[in-house]
Length: 306
Image (tube, rainbow, N blue to C red; front, side, top):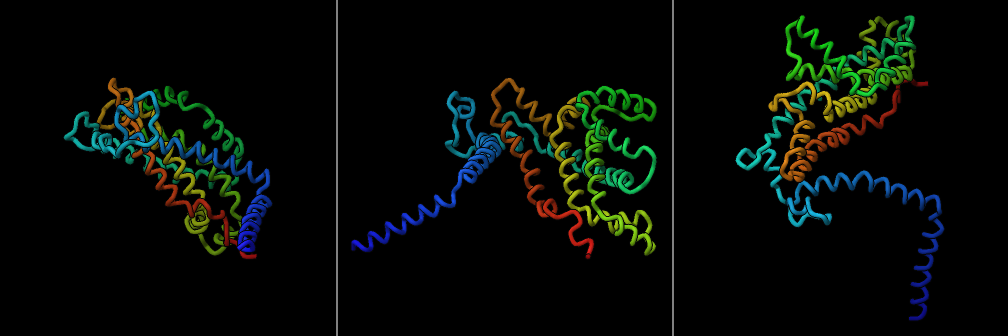
């Protein structure tokens, strides 16, 4: 009996000694830093989701309520059910955001691909100045571009006869002014990492420039195209300032404008704001998880055999 007790103590002591030996100050500090970093990222998301199920007294009280007493769907019913009080018709706002965000991302990727390929592969005077100028434009705050863009579009509307305000196509055009500079810069750096010998070999075999882009460059650039597409999609999906200036009709409000409208309601509707914010966040998370494998791929993995 004594031998068994000593053996158990020895095994327990050996485990603790082994754990202490494997744990250094560097690993301990790294673990604490990672824990704090994840807590700073995940806790606000948890608070948003949990608050969407809380009652008004729980979300508006002085003492914080970390876990709702029950999973109430009042906020979500207010967003989507036309038979409840303060119906928000949030489905229309989701559809408007989809109509704006996806075309913005697709057009940005297409235009930026052609522009970035020209800068990365073609030779012309002022190429470096052009790419640096594009990046400098992106460094200006978006608020500084509103007045020039609005004045330019107003002049064009008088000539071509289209409506500037309450026009989702105009919103897409204004978003391109924000997304194209950084997209061109990112893809230019990406295309320069692809060996030019691969494209030259395809041209020797009789491929035209556009065939080289379609058959060689684009398949090798899938990770960069996905990254740029997701990045520009998030810009258009979350953008508030430009949409607030160009959209006046409630039927055309995107989700950020609608959430801002609910937040500024005189009555306490924070639980509805949290529910709408949760719905707005989920598509971005799903897209990132869906395209994660593309984001992890190498730029030219397996393209050159040596």
